[in-house]
Length: 187
Image (cartoon, rainbow, N blue to C red; front, side, top):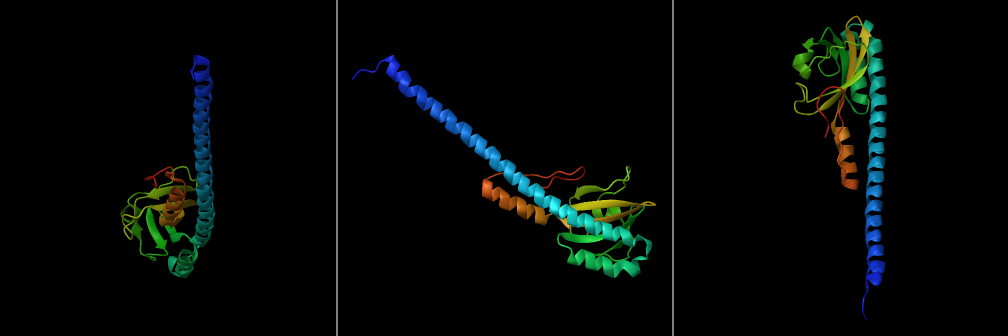
């Protein structure tokens, strides 16, 4: 049996097209899986954000009372709210009340390694590489300006986000990182 060029082309071209089509379909499926996985991560992050924003709002409402009068409520908010590590109040870059440190006045730079001055007076989310209480553990800080150089804050332990990212990474062999306006990326 003699193969001529026509037979060769009739065999090779469908084979090459099949390989290219399989490759294109696998790339499409991988992109689709990554999009779905990223959507799951962002949906959970949005869920955490809504819970923590609510906690920060509850903290901001307590601003008119002395810390010793609201400390019990702050501790309850910090301890009983999922994902929240601590919540409290900052005035002129000093933490004046916190569910962790109580009413001990502390410089924000000393506790969190950065200042939380809010020039545009809008709520914001930043990540920090740790606190003086829990060094080396990345945290997410939700800041809500109240006025008169006062800011309500809540801190989320990034371990919750890491765990979700790890599960999603293992499931789809993807790699994710989150970056906020300020601070280190959560990888």
